[in-house]
Length: 583
Image 1 (tube, helix red, strand yellow):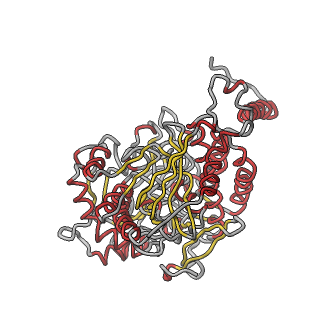
Image 2: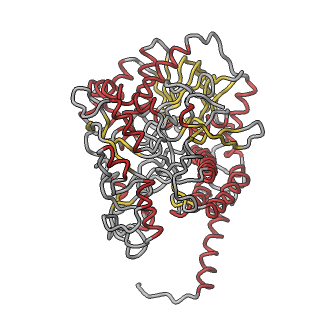
Image 3: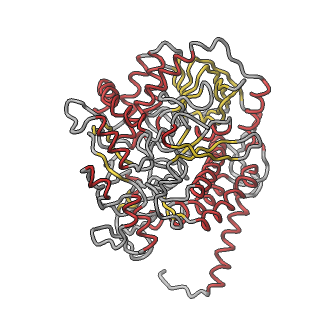
């Protein structure tokens, strides 16, 4: 039937309120109640505990994890590689179809010019140490990938498995890591649970390399729903410094068929990968979100745009003055904004009247590649926790700053940083004579892992995640920021953290994973809102309506986040020119 319903506003609110209330009640019902009566609840007592030991533990199995494991092994260390997904098949790895390779024989610019242009495009937010590292070492990493057959198949695993098997590196897949183990001020391993059987695994290690990627709020339209900042939150919980949470990624995706993993930047997931050369851009910011907020439907980007101010700050389809000086090219025209939730089979990418098949905001909760993650204190990815290294999107290296400057740079950067971290972790492991984890600490970790299974009442992680998405994903909260809206969202997020996280419940290994992922996303949301409130300016992919200009006087700095002795989130400025020194 296609009949029009004539409902008053009061009737509509009453009906929708009833539906929402029923949903909330169902989510909070005991596991034995009607919604789950056909499911068999796993008993937490059925979990067995296993311990394994290695020199270097690599967590993650994408580009960074692969190179970290291979290089640590080649440096003489015993290596174990553990991943929530599969080798080369999870996270953003399958999506990467372009990888940057700086070939000195064919490059049209020198490495010094490359670093300078990236810094200019990033408005000073990049760390030139890691920008230079990318250019100097990307070619060698690409040649290794080529020798493994990376460019011969659209499936990364086909090539990734070759060096792993040749070196007989232990690979443990489908294990969600939830805790880093710390004793006497240094990391001594990590713990998690198997997604295939009822088992908790404690990995004892002399050094650990986090290659866990980035994360988001499980948005639609981008293959990243298994990325929930797990590594970042594990490290934060043991005292590591975290950075980059105010930046936003603006990757577009197809509104017509979001499951096709297609966009203007990467192509079809079935395509074989290829290399890209040095070509500096100022891409994937929030200019289309700004257009959607200020102009409404339809979102169009072109020379007739009446508001040039936003393009001078975050870039866009126009060439900002900085690009004109350097002779750079502006990014390609794209349509976007956070409209994927309104997509239809007709290709509409927004509320009625908004057209376009390429939409931005499909990575909601993720920052620009390499701009968020653990704070490094040297070029090897050593973090503020002794023995703990990070690489790839898990490392806040600011390789390209708060904006995307080099297509293919993310995959190449992960490979390069994984190499440095793996070799350094192997060398560091050689001087660790002994390490141990107390039985008390392991018992505490086991109890925390299984806590959601033990609860008889509470909230389902799926429902809490939906609430979080409703709070964080709106364009006027996450992308086009102002204090009033962020403070309002923060009140909701803090309520979720304080009341709902302690009541998250699970009935099987799948929902147990969801419970831990939901908690990680909520902590990430708090970090993003507070960091965005703290940065009272607009720059690159961070835009404040109430502070629309770049503040060169007060904000030539990154924001670092850590946890104090009381468990509270604390923030600090780290001036761009003081790396790697810390206050």
